[in-house]
Length: 139
Image 1 (cartoon, rainbow, N blue to C red):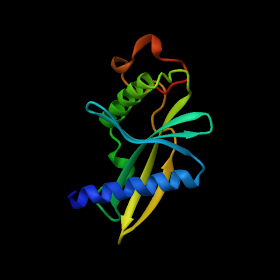
Image 2 (image 1 turned 90 degrees about the horizontal axis):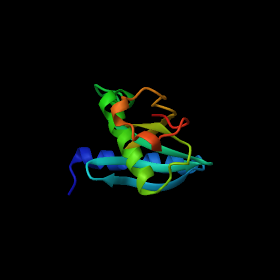
Image 3 (image 1 turned 90 degrees about the vertical axis):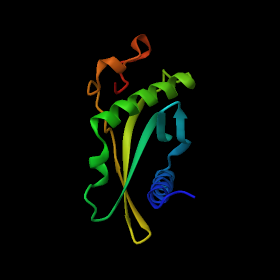
């Protein structure tokens, strides 16, 4: 049985996926893994692939959801997205990184979408896969 923290995280991801579907997005995958890398949600908004990180926090907690997206987490997200693109031979697709912030309060969940949380050039070049990268990708 998952811990209370894990149950809240799962419920937050469920709320985020439902929110994105209401926006008309197509959810391609949830909790996609490649070894130690993970992407919470891979979705399509029109022609764009969107790698979505979900952060769930209790309302009134010490940290707001967006504060949990650290530089290290962004680097891991870039590596995970590159692995996903490689696994799906999807290098020609435009993509971006979004964050869904979920705030829980008494069993209810409030969601907020923050688009483009990783900008081009923000990540370290050591994570680049070289010639597979294209100019429109956010790394």
